[in-house]
Length: 142
Image 1 (tube, rainbow, N blue to C red):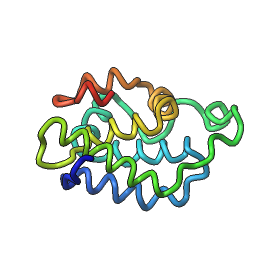
Image 2: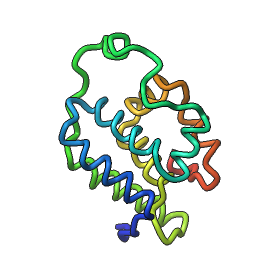
Image 3: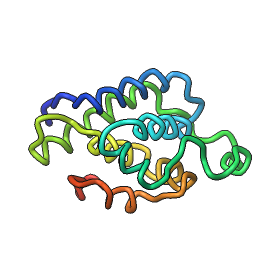
Image 4: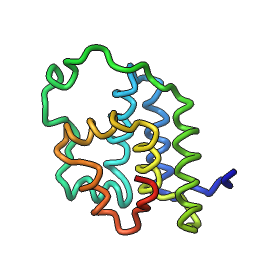
């Protein structure tokens, strides 16, 4: 069992933004999208995403991005606890004092898997490219 490591200021902002957005998500894909929007704004992950040119809107139109139907049922607000727990585990594994945005990113990648990969792809990047831009990225987390 991992101990709960406190969130850094940037990570706390990401979790707060995602937490306010999750109740309004219509699908797991929509939740993954909301995580990306929150991550894009803060910390090392935000800087890396912005350096990669990841913008607010997908490169594909909404109709092309949603051609597969309504999507996967949302994971719900409980996903915040799961992401926080996994991120805390990543921070503990690297012996950090706080959970950073990179820890959150890798937790989101674990929880959402291919759904988050698709969200990244629609914005013109992939997880490996993003991980290369993170100075202390845990390879075990990806």
